Image 1: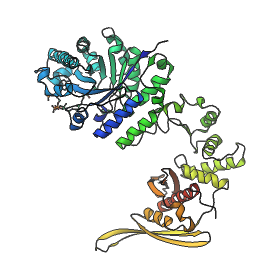
Image 2 (image 1 turned 120 degrees about the horizontal axis):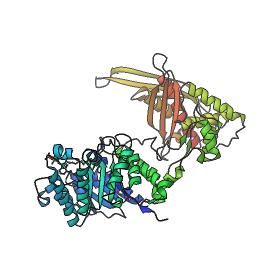
Image 3 (image 1 turned 90 degrees about the vertical axis):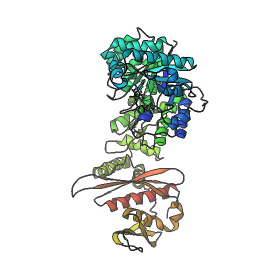
Amino acid sequence: MTRERLYLFDTTLRDGAQTAGVNFAIEEKLSVIAMLDGIGIDYVEAGYPGANPTDTALFGEARALKSARLTAFGMTKRAGRSASNDPGLQTVLTAKSDALCFVAKTWDYHVDVALGATLDENLDSIRETVRAGVAAGRETMIDCEHFFDGYKANPDYALACAKAAYEEGARWIVLCDTNGGALPHEVAKIVSEVTVHIPGDHLGIHPHDDTGCAVANALAAVGAGVRQIQGTLNGLGERCGNANLVSLIPTLKLKPEFRDRFETGVSDEGLRNLTHLSRMLDEILNRNPDRHAPYVGVNAFATKAGIHASAILKDPKTYEHVPPEAVGNKRRLLVSDQGGKSNLLAELDRIGLKVSKDDPRLGRLLDEVKDRENVGYAYEGAAASFELLARRLLGTVPAYFDVDGFRTSVELRHNSQGALATVCEAVVKLTVQGESLMSVAEGNGPVNALDLALRKDLGVYQPYIQDLRLTDYKVRILDGGTEAVTRVMIESADDSGDSWTTVGVSANIIDASFQALVDSVTYKLMRSGAPAP
Ligand SMILES: CC(=O)SCCNC(=O)CCNC(=O)[C@H](O)C(C)(C)COP(=O)(O)OP(=O)(O)OC[C@H]1O[C@@H](n2cnc3c(N)ncnc32)[C@H](O)[C@@H]1OP(=O)(O)O
Ligand SMILES: CC(=O)C(=O)O
């Protein structure tokens, strides 16, 4: 059966750049363009030439892409002047791009209030702008701004705008849910009414996510006939964002209802790159990836519940709607107080410990995990502490060192310049291979001082921890009031590029921190192959 072509239009670098807190430098835009081109996106709308120096510079040079069409965004000509006399429009028309996408008003109320133009003047702007784009030899499309609100208010006028663009030769007429308030059943109904006038293979959809329905609206529009979807990576975009292409692409490629009817430009390999691409975008923007993002989140295929884990070990399809590898993600079975022996077995297998399900030590380890989580430990996010707990129970963690004590102090005193300053000191006493060692360190806080003192002198083991670094430190108060328990999570890393997380729990924050630090150092010694005493 031949499948229909569905075109994907990415506007991460235009509408996505309208997200509060998001800014792209030109080099960042170029990397995102290359990533999108690499997975087979059809159109990459990279900005608005003339709106700011970055976008003007980006479109000032021709960019060679593999298959994507670089698209410049702009608005229709202003009322009261001709296209050739509109400097903003001229900048867009002369941009070095393959395609042009112009936003046009299609809601009569907006034409009146926002443009202060007559309905005919706006129709004229649409016609003249499309004519100018086509005459410039560029694939031209029109974003029909507020199309759904406009259609509800004055269907004849909204349709007249869309038809005017189509008649002048616009390749795509994109129906925008600009305020993001439309619901899937409304989108389906309105799109199917529009297809009576404009063929679906010339229609696109640009939904915003203000009701959380952008992805559903895109799918509803495709079901009703449109053949171009506009969206962004990770759902970036004005206010609540745009339709998330990272959610849409796997649905289009993996769900039979879409996979069997439509073909996109994204290859299977592109699909397998999606998790990486989504996280790369967050890396560029210095944002934390959404752990719960559909398909690509680190938790998208993470299972805590013991009943689920047990079935997944028998066949992953029991609790997975698609295989995680298809989108470049991974399955994770988490160890926690919600788990059973199956969760433990999966994690032990991952770390290379072979234990059979009827081994009584497995039951003891499960009880230990549940008891410890009951007092505040959280092992699902502290795999290194879990591994130490498991290996200790199985008798395979060497006693590299014994802690004989520690002390910290925080003092406000005059420094050498005579200014009052806080000074933090820590003393740690250890026994390493029968030798008593005492280290003192100063730090910018008591935990920093403790960390430095602990790692200052491990005797014969010192060479094994030289490249150990503390990279993150998180504190969570588990109960309010004077009975509060503190959970500390510490992330450490070394020069190999690996990182690991350890946990400590105590009523005392310094004590909790010390537990997590000791686990981190012990874990590092173990992974560095330090010999047992
Ligand atoms: C729905 C969307 O996401 S559309 C994309 C929105 N994106 C952006 O606005 C980002 C980039 N924008 C900008 O840098 C600036 O707004 C510019 C360069 C485009 C224009 O800046 P300025 O000339 O200072 O105008 P300003 O931003 O204050 O107002 C927009 C003007 O465009 C007019 N306008 C808005 N949409 C259209 C349109 N589709 N066709 C013609 N004119 C339009 C408005 O009526 C207003 O005109 P006015 O100044 O005569 O009132
Ligand atoms: C064009 C556009 O970004 C919108 O209507 O939302």
